[in-house]
Image (cartoon, rainbow, N blue to C red; front, top):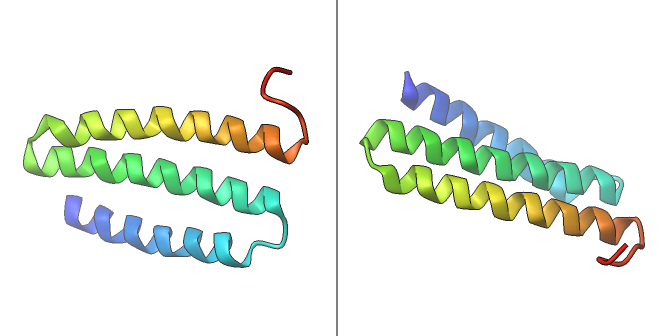
Length: 85
């Protein structure tokens, strides 16, 4: 079951990469990058379940925090506001 979910996740990653490359606006690209980060976290969670290793789950947690900070920075940049606003 996990293998099937990982294949579906890889297919969704390719769709997100397509949206990042061909997105008509910067906001579409930002959302696709955020969704791609969520998929990386899901992939880490699936790998942690499959291998029964905590390292992948820890890496997924760190990636989710970095993804959150990156999305905040990108949204501030797209609004043309400073980081101290």
